[in-house]
Image 1 (cartoon, rainbow, N blue to C red):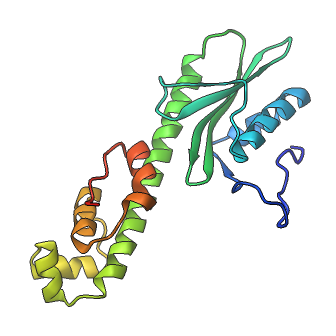
Image 2 (image 1 turned 60 degrees about the horizontal axis):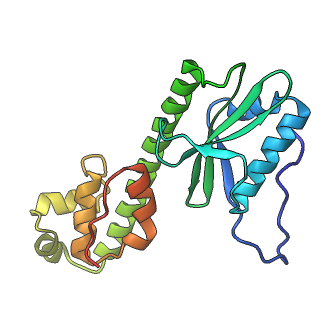
Length: 205
């Protein structure tokens, strides 16, 4: 694939450049598109990386919140790039395909839906790990007895927490711990938690 995504010089003042993560075979499919189509869609992705909204994109709420498609066509077919909008400076390309009619084929719809679900699950795990690490950092300021009082948990639960037993800790429980420790998690985690885990962040201001 040609070097469509331009590098930003260190001396150039521009918005932070978003990365592109390709799900499944989406990159290989895009590379196989005709040259002109590939360049057009590549430029639109580059615009997204720059924080700009391409003119020929539309939302796909039937697949999920924050999912859009980039569009192009030639005399032979319609071409689509389905992506999850920028989250924490990353754009997730879920699926690329070509079609012969205006309707999205069921197989392509299901593929995009399945990959979106996988991205959500992965980001939810990343969110949980970041939140857990923040809690561990703050917890170092206190003794185990103090943590029992602050968190409202018995000693065995506090010990599990401090020993990195993340598997039996739900995101909701970790959010409660963070709130009781006075961790301001809204600014750092709100977008990921609300848009991808689809829950409201309820920490105290």
